[in-house]
Image (cartoon, rainbow, N blue to C red; front, side):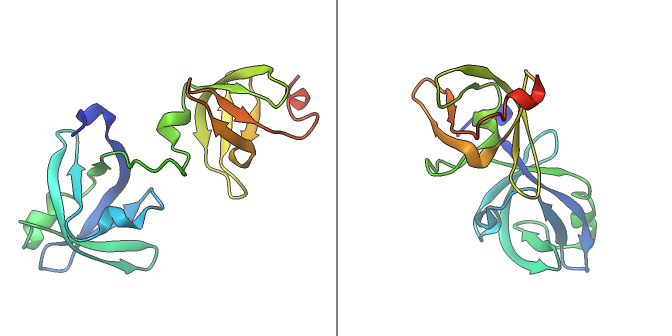
Length: 162
């Protein structure tokens, strides 16, 4: 198990729902297996351990029941808490926590800066570099063994920021 500082935020408890301990969860991840029965999540600043007993979609959110949370007052205690989970090991996915702080190298081998953060964008998430450049995540070719991000971008993309 990882240190709690290495856990990733995957959602937030919006509110209690009904009288039997369900809560409304707004996910910030696209990985729905985070809410599979038996999945372990961690809530709030103290990372209280919660095990998913059941979940079901509701509109854009999910109704979730956790083991040991059987009544409305117990569900109310979770209101507003951020939910965290251990990082998933999936080599075919790009993970924000792996991209942040990494050096970016273009197809010509030129160092283009370091990723400060990843900005959500409808067309493609954007790598925001310390140079001010914005690189669509779709242009990422690979992350090498040294943690450098290799991109293949259209001519002129980096000159837009000069």
